[in-house]
Image (cartoon, rainbow, N blue to C red):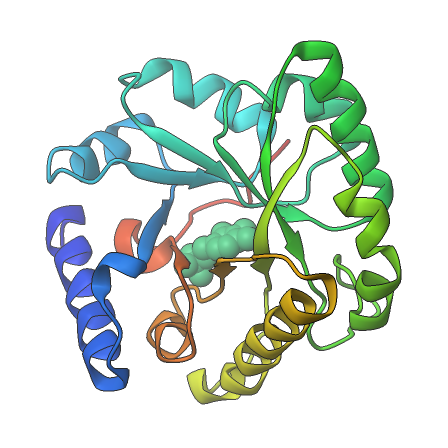
Length: 231
Ligand SMILES: *Cc1c(COP(=O)(O)O)cnc(C)c1O
C-alpha cells in the first residue's frame, strides 16, 4: 500500500469517526509523523496535497526539513531537550510536547532572545506513569499561573500519549480525561485551550470521537519504522 492510499484511508477513518459523533472534519487536523522516514516519503504525501507534518527529533528534522519545499508546515511532537530549543524554534509552528514548567521557562527565555513567539501544547501524563514525560493534573493546576505568565509562549491546548495497549478502546478513558482536564482548566483559569492533540496509529479514530483537534499518525501512513529515531 502506498502513502497516497494510506493517507486516503486514514482521512476516511477520521471522517467516519467525526460523523459518528456529529463533529465537523474541518475541526480535525491530521499531522503526518515522518520520523525515521526519508524526505522521499514526505514528497509522496505532499503530492496528494497533504502539507502538515510532524517530527519528534530535532537532529533529524534539521536534516530533513531543508530538503523539502518551504510551503510544508511542521509540528514538533517529541520531548524537547533544552539544548535543542534554539535550533527547533525556527523549524516548527507548534510544539506538542511541552512537558514541564522548567522547559516552558527555558523556551520562553530563548524565544525572547531569538525574537520568536512559539505556540505550544502542554503534555499531560494522563495515566500518571512514573516513566513518562508530562504534567500530572495537580502539578499542571499548581503551575498554570506561572505558565500563563510566560509572555513569549502561546499556550493553545493539551496533548497526551496514553499507555501502550493491545486494544484501541483502552485509550478512550485517557482521551476523555484529557478533554475533561482541558474543560476544567478553561473554567478555573478563564482561558481558551482549543487544541487537543491525541490519537496515533493505534487509536486515532477513538481520539476523534473524544474531541481530538490534532491526531498524530505515522505508521498508518508511512509504514513500519525500520529503526529507532536517533538524536
Ligand atoms: C512517533 C509518534 C507518533 C506516531 O506514532 P504512530 O504509532 O507511528 O502513528 C505520534 N506521536 C508521537 C509523540 C510520536 O513520537
